[in-house]
Length: 371
Ligand SMILES: C[S@@+](CC[C@H](N)C(=O)[O-])C[C@H]1O[C@@H](n2cnc3c(N)ncnc32)[C@H](O)[C@@H]1O
Ligand code: SF4
Ligand code: SF4
Image 1: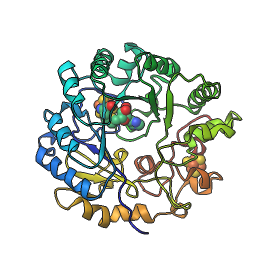
Image 2: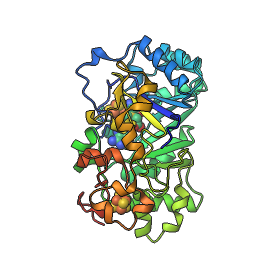
Image 3: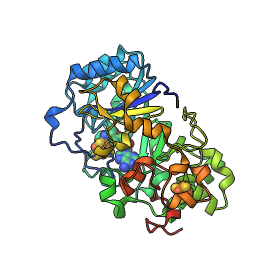
Image 4: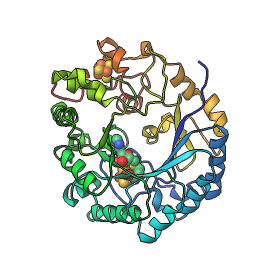
C-alpha cells in the first residue's frame, strides 16, 4: 500500500512519573533513566517531525513536567510547524510554571482528573494529595488563559462516579472531557482484576451516559475514547446492543478520526496514520505499544524517523495486514466487519501476536466477562 504521511505523533519525553496509577500504559523499564533523550536530541526529533509534515504532536510520558528542561522543549516546539499539546497529571505545575506555560504556543493541556474528589482521584492515581495539586494547577493555568481539556481514565476505581466527575469538571470551568477506556497494556495487564470493568459495569456506564446525552443533560462536551479506532468499537457497540440502544451508537462517533483506513483492515492506525516515540528514542506504532519491546519499529538513535516510517518491517506489516489475517476468536465473530478486531496493542499484550484477537472483548469469553 502507499505510505502516507504520519498525521500525528505521541512523544513520551520521559518514562519517569511522580504518581503510581495501577493501570499505567506507559509503565516501561526506567532503569536506564539516565539514558533518556537529551534536549538537543529532542530538538532534532522535532525538526524531523516537521520534515515529515506531522500535523499534531502530543507531548506526554511518564509525567512530562518532571523533565527539568520541559520549558525549553516547549520553546522548541513553539518554533515548529506542527500543533502540539501536553498530556499531564498537572501535579507539578505551580503558579510560576503556569505563567511560563501561558507564554508558550501550546494549544492545550490535557489533564487527568479521575474523580470528583480526592478520595476517588487519589485512589486512581495511587498517591495521596494528587487531587489537590492537580486542581490547584488548573486554577493557576486558568488565570494564565491556558486551554485545558480533562481526561478521565475509567476503571473499577471510578466507574460509579463518572457523572459526578463530569459535573465536578464542569464546575471548575472545563468543558471538553474525554473518557479513556482501559487498554490492558503496561501495568494494567498486571492489575486486571482490580481495575478492568466487567461487561455489566461497562453497560451501566454506557447506559447512564447515553441517556444523559439523549436528554441533552451531559454537563460537558464529552467524547468516549475506546482503544481501537473503529467507527463501531466493541466497547461501545456491544453494551448498547445488549441494552437495546444500538441505534444510538452514532452519538459517540469519534469526530477526531482522521484516518481513512481500507474497509478490510484492522481498525488500528498504528504505523499507518501515526506513531509514538519513547524517551529512549524507540519508535512504536502507537503510545499503547511502548511497554512491548517486540513492537519497536526502530530507534531514532540508529536511523532517521523518515527511514523508520518508510522502511520498518513492523510498520509495513501493520499497513499490509487485513482482517483476513486475524487469528483466534474474532475470526468467526459476526461483528468482525464492523468492529474490525479491537485493539492491536491489547491483542498483542494478551495473545502475543499482532494478528491475535482482542480477548478483552466479552464475546471472546476469555476475560471471564459476564455477557
Ligand atoms: C500515559 S498518561 C501520560 C501523561 C500523564 N502522566 C497523565 O497521567 O496524564 C496519558 C493518559 O493515558 C491514560 N492512561 C494510562 N494508562 C492507560 C491505560 N492502560 N489505558 C487507557 N488509558 C491510560 C492516563 O490516565 C492519562 O490520561
Ligand atoms: S498514567 Fe500518567 S500519572 Fe499515572 S503513572 Fe502513568 S504516567 Fe504517571
Ligand atoms: S469478538 Fe472480536 S470481532 Fe467480535 S466484537 Fe469482539 S473484538 Fe470485535
